[in-house]
Image (cartoon, rainbow over all chains, first blue to last red; front, side):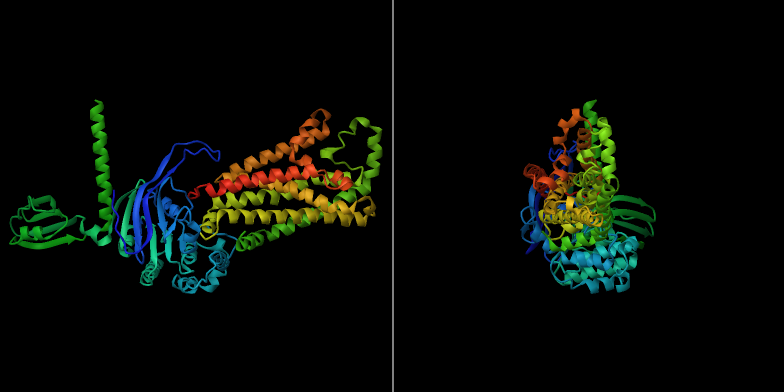
Length: 329
Length: 267
């Protein structure tokens, strides 16, 4: 899907970024089938925005992040992060970026504080936000003195978040950041991200938790099987999704056939339900004068938008398969 | 070379270094004590049974002379196993192990180049090997003094022996690094490097015990550390250069491959 927004100041610019795994000859390893992990990703992330990268496990989110950080080498295409090329100048990118990997691994023999000291010192810049972030995530000085091996999953994730943000990076790249956090800590984390945005910092985070993307992000890209299937402002994405309408009437339901944006109409005496998409005015005009006793319009959720994309894709795939089968007969 | 990573590696391995160095000092002490206690008697006995003389030169060492005993100490599996803590285990855990655990990516997601990370690990490994070999020789010198056989030891050649020992384990460590950067998991990398070392050890031992197999010894890295000859003659240039070249080639391979590898998410 070719969609990109032109920014005032782009922090991330990817153009046709593609990554295939396998098929290599060097260094020697077992040959296996080439896997298309990411295909022709073109996306731009603006300065000061929270950008959500949404998709199920295996969709290509982590591959994209690793490409942006120079941990993987692109098969084709190119990208710039903070103005630096991801292939030729990844050190400069990493110097200004905070990164939280998915399912972060820590050195179990170190204490939380030693871990943060070590990772912070590799940046060569002050860890000015550590105390604040640790405080917000309820990681006390006493807790930080304990060995990492004694930490729960949630505490490890908190250490991961602190190490990614403690040096006040221009760009934070967070892979599934709320994994393992309880709802209270998730809220504290959302507040942290809001403050990053207010401070003009950029956050790029991947998730498969749709509600948090909907709540936090300015824009969202949806990725599936290595391909971006949507890129939009969150309100725009929601506005174009179908809303479910139910109404109870006194008497016959209004006639909605042919009304723009209305589909799946189920009508019987005293009841009507339908799906409503886009502009609501034609719908409102059509029901004007109807004897409505009760009306419910469920707001579109990003989750539904997301599932619709998938449903469409699945339907398209099923149709293609059916055509192939028909042709074979 | 990254000083922060270096300090971290040293801190992670300092206890291990102390234990291995103490064990090797003890091992180095043991050899002169054994020589002093039974060396001459053994020599007398073996001289009466010429058929067994060849079998008494295990791996190029023996118990009939002090240099021979020191050689035996170096080729003995216990000494090799102790030195392998740094020559094999550290290179394997430093790259493939960290990769497998997932800790490599949090370090390399910072402004640390892969070359710099690799060189730092290599320098730390050579330092640990140097200290471990030195601990062995210090133990030997102390024991020689204690049993009054120091006059049989050419002290001027001890630094050369130290250098030759460091070069042997540098070459092994470099091969371990080459394997380590080539795999995402420790198991296959350990399999490769242990196979190489065990085959090399087997060639050296079989060649020392069986005259018909003596031609196999030059194919073993262990053949290029002969403490008895180094203590007698000084620097054996060919041996040292060969170990240096093998190690350098393996390091060059690792330096080429490691930065070009994809570091996909750990499984």
